[in-house]
Length: 349
Image 1: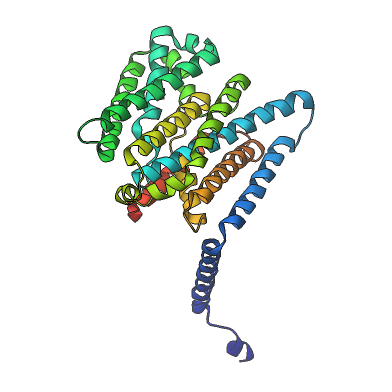
Image 2: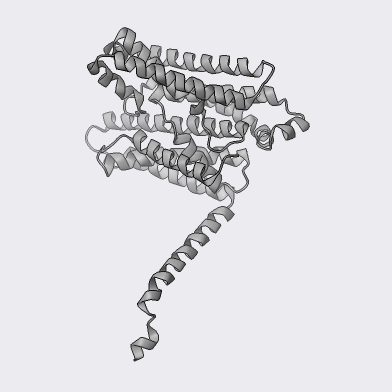
């Protein structure tokens, strides 16, 4: 009798446990939302530094003079991609006023695959793999930036000057590029297609140090320009009418932002390969963590989230799962799920 008066009926225990879990989750969510951006940046900076140090020095054995520089190059490539993809996606969503769009909707990833497929079809996959990395990098960046520049100039100098029409044309051209790539791949020899297929996924294992230096300079210059225009980006986020009313040359600024996005995406894609949904993943998390939606805080938060995700994810794959799969596959899977969730949630703005 004494036990029956002190213990709750078993049917009530699951409900109480669920209520406590829901309450704890609500408190955690409220704490995250109420955290100051300065605190969020500090925590993310500490986490990024921790995963970088772990990646560089965890189980560092053998020939340190050979292993450590290779790890450093890989970490530098991941950090560079985190900056380029995160910043470009944030800028693209700012000018389009839509939080589910990424620069890949303009067909950059499809154009990269088409360029690789066309070169392998005409020259042979072995010749593409053996070609000088500097030449490949220059051709890919030039083609992607030229494509975006022509598209933006055509769309913004006509009579319509519609950003929505630009996005629609980008989607159509991306589908065209994917169709042409698929046609060429079906005409190729199976052995050459197997060699070519490795180029379709992002890889941080064989990054050329010379290309890494060139890419770092380009990304640093673009990011410096973006940082100077961070307050203008805050105005753009309020909408076209508000930006024009406060004296912002909307068409000119949007053109510059889109060209900057194109350059960042082109450099990142040409350096390691396409990462379609990675930008959507880190920017969505950045909006959840940043309370004020100011680009002065959003930019570093998005970059640091990307750094933690890439370096930490690669560390888990190498040390825990033993290279069970490529990091880009995991990123695309998680980003695809997030994309579907945002669509179902109705986050189109």
